[in-house]
Image (cartoon, rainbow, N blue to C red; front, top):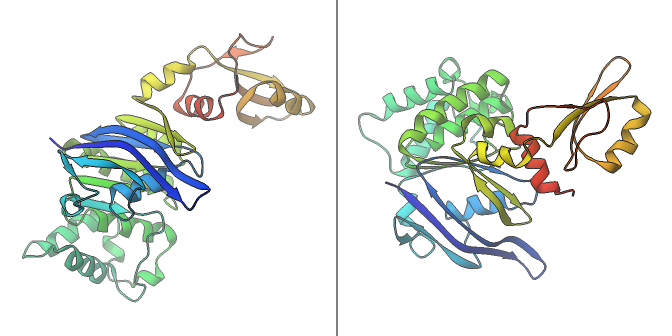
Amino acid sequence: MMKLEIKTLTKQFGQDKTGLSNFSATIEKGVLGLLGPNGAGKSTLMKIIATISKPTQGNIFLNGEDIVKNPDVIRKTLGYLPQDFGVYPNLNAYEFLEYIAAMKGVGGSGLRKRIDILLEGVNLTTDAKRTIGTYSGGMKQRIGIAQALLNDPKILIFDEPTVGLDPEERVRFRQLISEMASDAIVILSSHIVSDIETVADEVAIMKNGTLIEKNTSFAIISRVENKIFEIALSPNEVEGFKAKYLVVDITRLSDKTLVRYISHEGSEPDSRPVTATLEDAYLFLTKNKQ
């Protein structure tokens, strides 16, 4: 069984900026979803695990071997899609994936069949012979997902993989990841909390380079059970209400504004309790408005 042990990982950028601070976690088979505001350290953590960047201090062990000291231990079994994934616009999908396969040392008689399977999995079969420069942003993202899977990796790292994907393609991606996760470690970051909630076995919430919570979605959601309410307000009441409570969502109706909010000490009159979600818990833990 694959196991990643991250121990007191710290990453400094110059003297004033800390990307990670004493981050420790154990990651095993399944999907770990990373959530956190911009600057929380998610991409920094992923780059260090992918051996693209080195920590200032700390260690990462894969099945007991330190990948900071010996990065080849993880590289041979790694699939990685960075947030700023680039393509070669003059190549078509087949040519691009064959090129990436050569860089990864993946070859043999079964390569073309594997590429066909991957292109079908990301719904690019009919566009496979078009040059990638003619692709939309979502299609380029899908070819990025395919390249990450080329070497049948046992550790997959996806940094904001659903950016640019339409709702149907997001569902397809989640199904693909669910299938992979039965036999691999998948680390996935996204600003779309519902994507994480749907697919992740565990969720890690980060803030300011530190880990503030790591647990199942169910356990994290339980932190805000019986604290989530909705109330209909007139538009001119909303700003004053936001100053008093942590508002997590606002829906404009014809003559009223429906406000979803967190309260520790009971609700305002005319409020109704609603079922908590992972997004509620995420905002509660990262905003931490008491």
